[in-house]
Length: 462
Image (tube, rainbow, N blue to C red; front, side, top):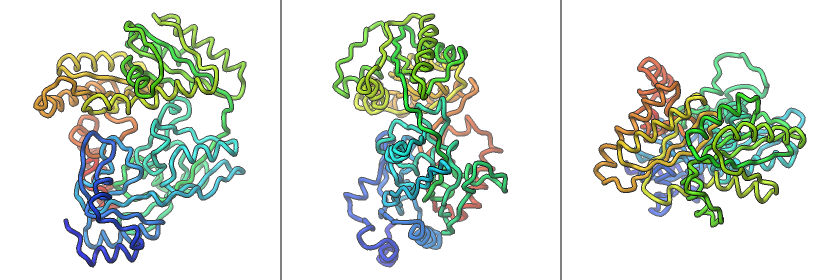
């Protein structure tokens, strides 16, 4: 649709003339997120400053049936911020204030355009901890984390975004501003609208503020990188570590090429022997170094039962940081090597070896290349499928069938098709593999209640 002069004039009155963009350069910049090479040009980009301005925009767009796509930092991997119906991109980047950090009650109120790492560091400075820790934490926004219920490496010990949310300020598609819960640790008052909003991928409302619970900050940690000669054994070892009574703060799996590409991307001089198939990056944290040393010894006892090379222990802060950089940059590094698709499967932890076997069988069947890494401690593998030598026709026509088979295997193993990236735009064709029509119809009806005219983030999930 082409927006009229009257519509644009209304947006300028709401946001201010300097925060309404129709130029080609800005529209192009906001036409894509980090999902493959997909791009959809919006008609206009709006940058409101607060919930009241967002309310006015949504009331007007709902009245005139103008599609609105909410957007945070644009780091999503399922196409959740793609304006597939054109219309308005509504950016939350100006909602960038940490409103308060309440040390007495271990809570913080934060606007949703705040970068996750900025928020983490602000609470650490007060001796507090916000554990959700996505790999893109240095650039992603709190709002995007809420929209997808992001997890990250620390989820194995501390849980995901939804586990830290007490209350949300939300602007509904019809323009009303509500708070969904209460700033209390317990709340049995009516339906849990807070948890309904988390993971709803910007389809039910636009979250403008969040009240998070915080915990004391663990001051000490140890990081160990363990090379395995068998990737399948590395997956088996994940559950063995947990069964030994150890609770790592992170337990990450990386296939050989993931760590090789990441080291090359970062310019790190790390040699990985050809025979090594995978690594586990294991972190333990707390406040008692003697206790952490005992846990590290237990971990060594467990991993030594498998065929491994010499583990590397990060002793200094710099060494630990370099080990974590290898993991955090794996996604970016892998994607620089080829056209790619990334899938976000999650299975019960003990089923990881079976999932990896299935991935490698599909790789041979479809003649593509796969590189897996992820949060193995909670059964979450990110599978990067590289086009490599596949023809463009096979990539476009045959690979979707391979992805379907992958998701069917994942569900058969007791898992589901997205752990933290969401369904968004690109996984919609596969959602029926994980959810039946009864569940999907319930979700569609909930969407209609919140968004009767279907203006908010259309063409997502369903």
